[in-house]
Amino acid sequence: METGQTVTPIPLWNIVVIAAIAAGIQFGWALQLSLLTPYVQTLGVPHVWAAFIWLCGPISGLVVQPIVGYSSDRCTSRIGRRRPFIAAGACFVAVAVFMIGFAKDIGHRSGDSLQNPTKPRAVAIFVTGFWILDVANNMLQGPCRAFLADLSSNDHKRMRIANAWFSFFMAVGNVLGYAAGSFSGLHKLLPFTQTTACDVYCANLKTCFIIDIVFLLSITITAITTVKETPITRKEAGDEEDNEGRSSGRAFFAELVMAFKTLKKPMWFLLLVTCLNWMAWFPFLLYDTDWMGAEVYGGKVKGSASQQKLYDEGVRAGALGLMINSIVLAFASLGLEPVSRLIGGVKNMWGVVNLILAACLAATVWVTKVAEAWRGEHGPQILTPPPTSIKTSALALFGLLGIPLAVTFSIPFALASIYCSEEGGGQGLSLGVLNLSIVIPQ
Image 1: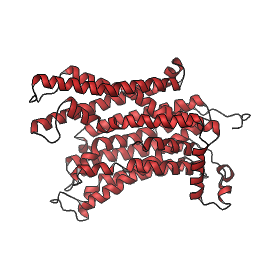
Image 2: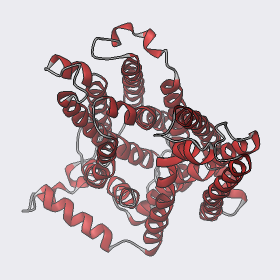
Image 3: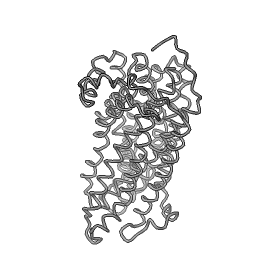
Image 4: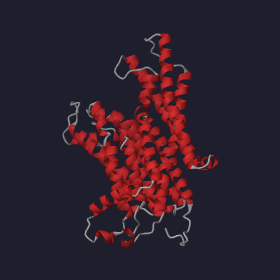
């Protein structure tokens, strides 16, 4: 970096507006987590195959984010290098969400029988839309974070604040998504969503996704029209090197390999710790509501009617826990910068919250054992929810986990941007490399 060059600070509202796109992204993710697996089963897809559909997330993240990051680093569009990818990603999300929400209707019009439990055309449309959605989310999220790093103008404090705001808006999106997904009468706002092929549950899903489309596009259009970006020249992008005989594909892989070869020790530690963090997070994120239903409440997915009802009560309690987790995540995100100064920096804070994460995950075993002991005292036939003390302890764990989650959503990305700015590398590719340490454990 040229140290003699004076950089005009970017107004903080620019960073906040771009970070707000995270609310639209996470709104869709929350809907996926809360509604899509049951919806897949209404299409006739067996539960075990539904798990394979979710593989598209890590696969697309493994491939798409580094490519998009590299491409956005070198984009010479006259409207900027990040904004074209953000706009395209938002449009693809809208198309994908429409395909998912209207899969049953399109499948029925294409020949799916209402009497047949398996609807092959609807499944094909859904899976295609789902894969496009994950690719588009990766296409949208990477350039957003890279744009925040660009707006921070190599100011390390600004980079941390920018990623904290991104984490805050992810929490806002979670709250909105879980709230929308839990409201069973939402389809009444758009009565046309309930059709011959689409029952009330399906109509609610469609309504939620239509709201998501409007919400995301509104935020994205506001962000990319109000926050300006300075285009880069072909020389700054390094295109002249590609024109000397290397194809863009070969140039990408060459730069990716070079990025790993030239990684300094702090970046390797960052990738390792991030990888270990997400190995801890994914089991909880995938099975948190199931843990509440099966282990804390003692219900069963495939049991008697009373056992199934108990399981459903536990799952709803888990959904409440996720809402509490998102609220704590929002407040914790805004408090990261001042708290990090009190305890000696972001690295110290990351170490402390990792201890909190480990303690909370270990405490889930303790809550399970206490719940099992309570059921043992009252006999195995007990089919009532656990006492308030056990439920409160489980919900408290959900809330406490919002603190390390706030750090997980912000600090690794801020540190990657800081290390990248110190080395003079491309922010997009750097964040794409960091994303590899998230999707590989997933």
